[in-house]
Length: 291
Image 1: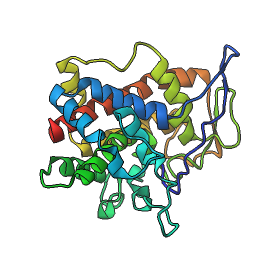
Image 2: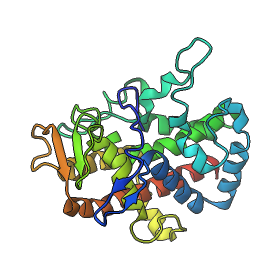
Image 3: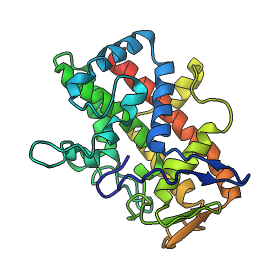
Image 4: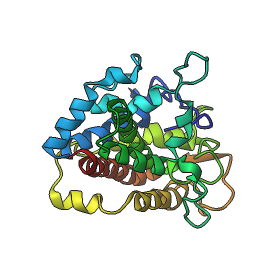
């Protein structure tokens, strides 16, 4: 979910103090969010799609990334982040070409447009479309199809983290220091809150998101195109992500923002819905590509 400019935050802390005073390990959207999106999708694709996915993932050795597993959909969901540090024979990042594919910098205070953000196809929505096309291409090499699959599983999750779809010249909220309830170490920022602490709380609040959804719910949530979903996530960044920490989302952002308990409680349903949307939309794309 990051690029070189969005350095992957370490798990925000080994333990996070919540209101009850107990220490609870914090999992980042990185792992927990992406894995949940993948598991929702796996539970909602057609049986024949699931077979095709598993057949492709059994060939994970073709990726030549032994330290980054992709044998299951949950493993594959974090592969695109895991491979970022891998160096090639020339000492340069082997997957450096994909750094800009995890997000799209669309300013929330300007009219929505993917033209500049997706120049030359270097943005998350363009890569989602490309990966689906590769998977549908019967002439594509197995390695290319496998790589398209693991990227797709990850990128659909990325698109549904609002700060990967909309921002305000602050590196997707990475430049905005944040306090989450009473917790605010120097490295915690608005982006890592949505990646980690908020995502963990949202996913673990209420009934499990990983289940078979009804056809009506799947059709409603998965309706639209990748561009529609991009605009929607961008709008969430404006209306919710930034608006929750400042009265005017387009006013200058303070150096530090605070998400108090009342704010967090209001954000939980939004964050849950984004994960749910990601999972069911990923299922739709996988069915279209492999079903």
